Picture 1 (cartoon, rainbow, N blue to C red):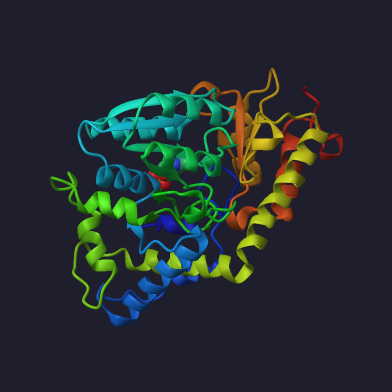
Picture 2: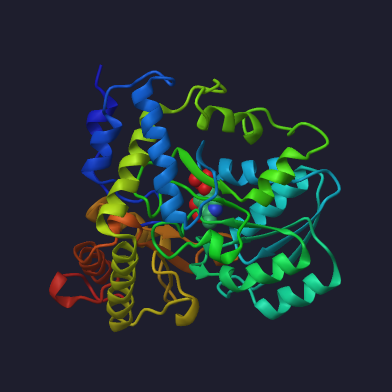
Length: 381
Ligand SMILES: Cc1ncc(COP(=O)(O)O)c(C=O)c1O
């Protein structure tokens, strides 16, 4: 019987995630599996927590990777903090803001939202006006909106949320490792990320951090967290203290992978990694504009790791993506929701954010769009 794994081709992952995984992380994943209470594994857990604190800019003791992808981190934040009837405000300008509304609503929260046009950032003055109208238990926003390529001003929203008396919940799935994240400085109380974006580890874990205020709210719940698997009051007993209490079997090798991915970012230097994302982004934008393509998002709020590019009129965007994949082995993403068919999403995340990858993609796009006569393609535009 043929082994299907032997048919996997290497693809240059330039979509909205997962990103390319480097050889150090792939080797870490292949290390021998240990027991979940083995002292050598517990040492790796402790160091993983410490490296996450460094990368997130926090001293929060409750900082650990949740088992599951970014959405598990989102669920974990809401399910541990929301009590039925709580007022929750979501600042929404894309798919992941909408997902937050769904998650909070399922927990019996009274959800309000301030919505902004997709492709534009959250406007701080509008948030300020809403926070003057009502007190909230939680205010939530996505830092890097992967569905549009917009960076939201999470640093400026933090003080407003604190003044309202709410907890501040931030999605950093796409931001962590690619742009600065400073939880303590920004007053963030609950934060979650993902492994498969700028950390360049396969999908499977969601690094999460809770401030002392968030832990206090968790500990003072009048009833149990309504989800056993994501209950941080139990999970924390496995991740801290001299004696570790089993909760669920940790995804051992994924934690090796995350540990190694964090080591790679720290070894490179956090600021150097951010700068590499920015340089690759500017290189990409310049090259795409040179062949007449336009960016969706205004320069001041563009994410370096997620580039939303307008599909030119008359171009079959799905056909271009499929030729990129099949003929050039490059994956890019499509638009979602109201942007479906209108944009491509080009990821420059983690290991992918390198000049040679930008050059390879631009060469392939020129050819497929017929904008590169020397590539031998008919000029169909
Ligand atoms: C900003 C953001 N939040 C949440 C998620 C959900 O993460 P996952 O797909 O890993 O569950 C994603 C995934 O792309 C994302 O980009």
